[in-house]
Image 1 (tube, protein in one colour):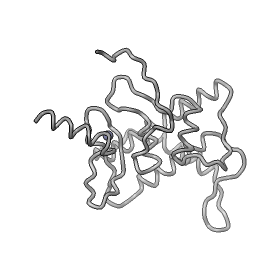
Image 2 (tube, helix red, strand yellow):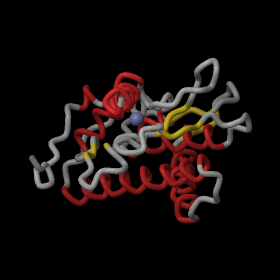
Image 3 (cartoon, helix red, strand yellow):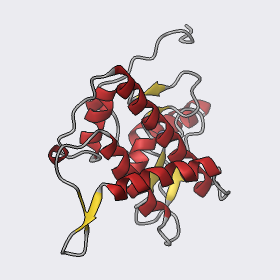
Image 4 (spheres, helix red, strand yellow):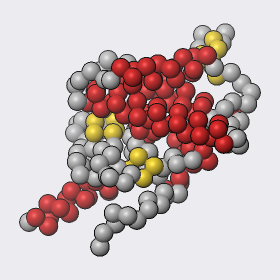
Length: 202
Ligand SMILES: [Zn+2]
């Protein structure tokens, strides 16, 4: 049976896996999967994006974010989501593959970092704080950008990895295991699939 033309029905936001180990990696992993001809985008509309952001920690209840109503603003938001996600994937993939990232990806992250800093202010405690009051859904992208900067700027030997499932995943994760030999985004998904394949090959 061919599934080539079956539409991809997105799973509920609550069922989206957060296996990246970092907010910015979970964001990049909202495409399933990187090798598929027809990809499932977990963040297909503003409602899903905002719900996912709340679940993943990119938005907090105190942010007071609500879904944009006007069609142009909704479309613009989703374009921004897709663009930053693509740029971060490029930046992390470049790091993993030990090559220079595309300049447009660097500029893309740079843009959101400046948006984030514009929306923060230095407190008397010497720390940066988000400005209070109602914020727009772009606050999520700003938080994700700051998390990405933190990860990319980490001078420690990189534990940033790509899932070893090279046929149907492509997710990225931070390996925080003690021995540093984690291979899968998740054992119960990709790890098990590989074991089954080896078993069938005998
Ligand atoms: Zn995987």
